[in-house]
Amino acid sequence: MSMQKHSHARKNLLTGDWVLVSPQRLQRPWQGQIEKPEKAELPDYVPDCYLCPGNTRANEIVNPDYSGSFAFDNDFAALSKDSDIDAAVSNLFVARGESGRCRVICYSEKHNLRLSTMAVEEIAAALETLSDEFIRLDTDDQVSYVQVFENRGEMMGCSNQHPHAQIWASENIPDEPAKELTTQSQWFRESGSQLLADYRDAEVDDGTRVVFANKHFIALVPYWAVWPYETLLLPHRSFSAPHEMTPDERFGLAECLKAVLFSYDSLFDTSAPYSMGFHPRPSDGQPHPEWLFHAHIYPPLLRSATIRKHLVGYEMLGMPQRDLTPEAAAERLREHCE
Image 1 (cartoon, one colour):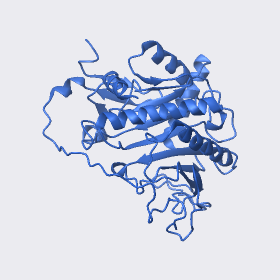
Image 2 (cartoon, helix red, strand yellow):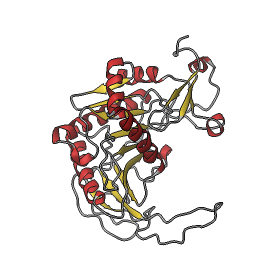
Image 3 (cartoon, helix red, strand yellow):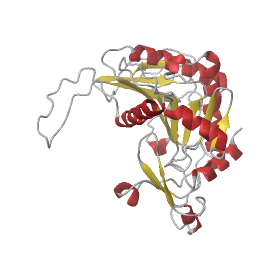
Image 4 (spheres, helix red, strand yellow):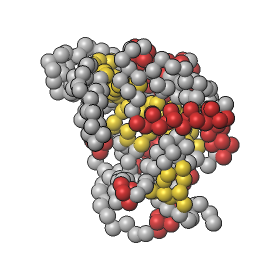
């Protein structure tokens, strides 16, 4: 039986989780919510935006009149600098202190830009700032992991449309990178090679899930994708952290990011929402030959600019499930790449 027509489950090699794929469900009629996308033209400067140059933030700090990228401590950090709490000692009520630092990176001084509309050179410059931030946090003895992420669009809970990302540097390794550390370490011990490098090469040979590729990076819809148009970005050269990229590789990543995010905008005819994040190796001072630097992009859209994928019902109580196969999703995204 064809996996493009019949239900089956696929294993996520990075987390060990399974996803149910049900392509036959695409034939069912849709009678749910349908809305037209709202298109609003934003100015390049907004007087009451907390992130625009020269404006006063909520804590009364005034932004410099910056040009390009700009980084600062998050005014409402999710992690305390010193979380010295008493850990729970009961087997039933378990807690621990979790300290760290939270930073914000504005990609550009222009409020109306986003990664899909920025020039590749501008994205590369923002990635260089991100790499500099990683170096500073990576060498902090109190930090075990540096998570860079961006929530784009109101649908993803983004409180400010100014183009920006966040960095949460935590005392402990968060759950998702911890799962990836376990699987990649096991693969490396058993095979002597990197899991994601082997997977990347297999995807290149297959080709059906590849969305975009250049000399330095490849973007694909992973074989085990949960979100309909989820993508995974992988480098062709093995390195484990953002500051290890050469200038050419940084430009290649910028080009790859722009192409994929533009394909979302084009496919859904809107400024597409998404959550995106980079997964570098842990910042625990240990060598990590098993780890390949990579990025995940999770757009929630499914049928249109306003029809989103929800993890509900069986997916909350059983396991993740998708109707559109990763192969079909990759084909649609390829058609909308620049």
